[in-house]
Length: 276
Image 1 (cartoon, helix red, strand yellow):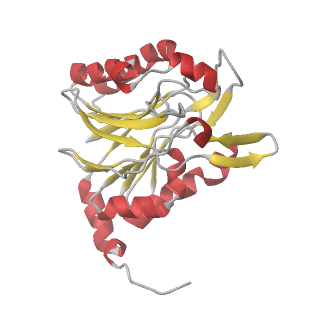
Image 2 (cartoon, rainbow, N blue to C red; image 1 turned 90 degrees about the horizontal axis):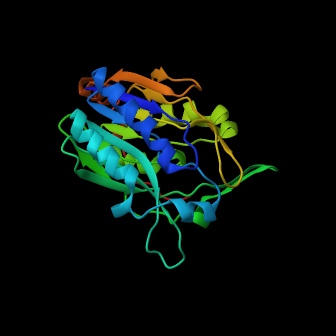
């Protein structure tokens, strides 16, 4: 299976972001990709909650989701929408950061709401409180496709190794990490974390990312790290897209997953222990 990772630089205006994403999906399909992956918050990068409340939609009404499902049908591809920022019916008004796996008939095969919220103080001038605007998910998800079992995750999840071990032990052979990573933490931790998750599980890790400074009509513009990556089940970097928006292609082979897991069968070597 040929997979295409899309590296985007979206604004806080979902309507203006959509045409470019649709065009890039068409380009990827035209180059032979049967599986196309977009990054976290494909529809809208914004840190301004009032603006998000104005421009975001419920899942059933979201135009980005509708258009991307149509694109999957049009091109006959599997599509990972890394995530969409969506309104919910939560009483406190918090949004969902939700990933979708779409089949070539445009059907939603799997949904995953980001479990781990990015509540961090990177520096004196860079602080994030994702949980103030988004409600965390509660369920890990593995989805079946004809070409692989897919384990879903989003961005900050990458720091929680137990999630990926659980996904792999539940059968996942390809782990998805769509992201909008901070440049500071990205430079320090992005590649090592992705490679570690691949090595620990003997899985492909595919991480489509947002990149650059994101235009904002309202609130402070955000900057993201880029460097969309594909990691082999042995921990090799197969693709690093740098910081420019664009598309990268990688070939997936389940034989590589089987070989890595045969060489080091760590997924079956868990031992009970006491303490600490």
